[in-house]
Structures are given as C-alpha cells and as structure tokens.
Image 1 (cartoon, rainbow, N blue to C red):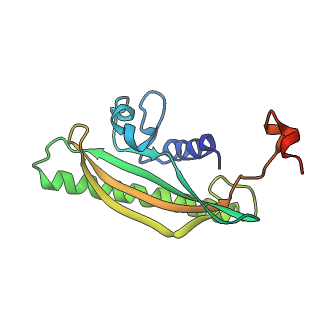
Image 2 (tube, rainbow, N blue to C red):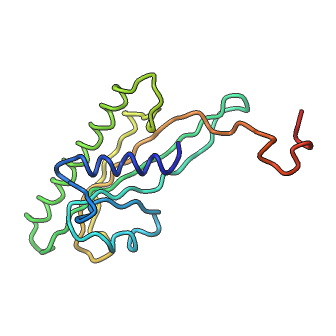
Image 3 (cartoon, one colour):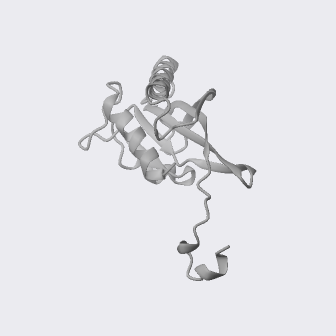
Length: 173
C-alpha cells in the first residue's frame, strides 16, 4: 500500500464523518510519524480530531510468497479544559471511543463493499483491531482519547525489476 493512498483514505474519513467534519478552515485531521506528534498537533485548534500514525511493516513468508504485515494506528483525541473535572474527562474519552468505532465500522463496510477489488486497506484484519485509552498526551496535558490499532496483510511489493538499477545487465538472469 502506498503511504499517500493510506493518508488520503483516512483524511476522507475525517472529512466525511459528521462527528469530525475536517476541512481546510477547521482542520481536524493530522498525519504524523510517531515521534513527531507534538509538531503535527500545532495546527489543530478544533476537537475532537483524528490523528493518523504512519504505518509500519514487517516482511514475512518465503521467497515466492512474501507478505507485508502492516500495523496501522489512529488516534481520536479531544481537549479537556479542566483536567480536574472527571466528568468532562470521562465524557471526552467516551466520545473519542465512540468516534473511533465509527471509523472502524466505515473501514469494515468498505472491506465488504470492495471485496475482490483493489482497495487501499485490502487485507484489513477485523480480529486484530484494538482500542486503548490514551491521555493525558504530554503535548499540553489536556488531550485525552483512544488509540485504535489494526493489522493489514497484503502481498509484499518486492518484485525485482532489473531496469530499476544502473547495472541492469548484472542482474538479468
């Protein structure tokens, strides 16, 4: 799967889901590397928001059947203005979990809708989905929510093409 397609898919979800309503005037979507969450969050001023982690991959299988096992993750976070107010915090956390499950249901619906067709999350494993409470996120200690993780199992894009190399004649069998 191409990273750009993965990001575009989740950005569309953030735009289409009424509970988020991402748009250019009120951004509620970020894509970030796990180590750069603080910088990514600087442009977000409206909540709740969807944060998409860059996907990680692990190559498995044998030479003629390589698979790309990918771990995806997204966050739904909301701002809690009074951290001492447990009801406000619990409501925000509950709202985030509910929105996260809506995102997962959208993905599952697409998996079935595009079955047998090319689809960015083809190989999505529903039994791999996990949700864990997060927060306070140490950016400003006012963000709470849920992190959802999932696995995608796709054919690995490892077909060798000698024309990709300057010394193609060396690699031709």
